Image (cartoon, rainbow, N blue to C red):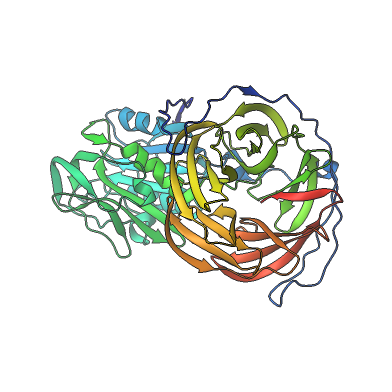
Length: 532
């Protein structure tokens, strides 16, 4: 009953330079990827602070890695990639138009169809997808069972988007069950219809649901109203909400008040809104996860041999390690992120002499290929990578030490597609990393003052500074190397490194507030922590 459509992603971008016109890529890098085990020593150590609890990092060989338990189900969803199921009640035809819109979105790999006019999908079927879009044009096979399984899917962490006529209570197309009665739906059911062509006003263009959306139109709509705690981001000009969302039990539901069936009485970027729900609620995956367990890992570098290594981590505990590729002379490893959309982290390299950048595409720790990225203008250096425009593609963060100015270069894999200036840093402060600290789905700056040892978080909207807050002061002898969510609660944590003792530590944060800490593994001689 499920019909699958796979997609090869292709895009053409016009390069517009704000800071400089970068050089386009040519082939880079020889393959350099023999896997070897790398071991580290760890020990149980005293508390870092009164809030801290120590953790003994357990050393393990590469052989032990191969004996780890089987991968968890979430591994089937590579970070930043979207598998979509359209569960539609329509006895007339398949919803080809909206499916094609969804397929056209970057990083959508599969769009399957389930005809809910003839049956109801099970939770076991829904969890094979990270976005489920459900709508009705004719009667559901079982409206109660359909509402129940959508609620179960949302409770399990899936993104559920529902469309008209699910709130029309004049017939069997009305959705029922727990999704309608248990506080999930953003709209109240109604017998009112708004059957006329209308174009929505986008009332909150800054919301992640509306990222890149400029037009939404439809004919078949309903006179719905918002339920309690629901918020709209687009409104029809004749009154009802067009796009809304509602929190429930730590998850969000999205409602589209438009009939997106094979009647094709709609236009605009509805498919983008559906995929934006996944970008917003699922994010782009942990950027430092090399073994696909949804947990960030350490990336190490040996300045003498120019070798790299990955230490697989479970929170603060070392599980095992493997050697990564060796860098060529003159090149530095700046950061790690998935540039080519295969769900696997890649190396971002910078040559300060030539100002050339490069991306090394990896599979685990194995180098697959290298490609040049843009060349930076004089005075600028590459300091971090992160997604600043909500497309789940990492962008370059640049810094000018003379002016203290930052800038973001928007990237499509290794291709420069545009740029914008970011905020200027105050004297004495450096950019230690980027991550979303306040949970709004937008990447923020993490700052560190080496003299005072003070940290700060600058909350951004795109590249615009919104506000700032001080974070905890770093203990003497430690440097702040970056941030990643080691506890797995959706909030980035600080990663600290002491170059004298080679000790690492993780400070657990809730936004900018320190809530605990633990020692991580001690690095072997000659190795330093590069990321996070």
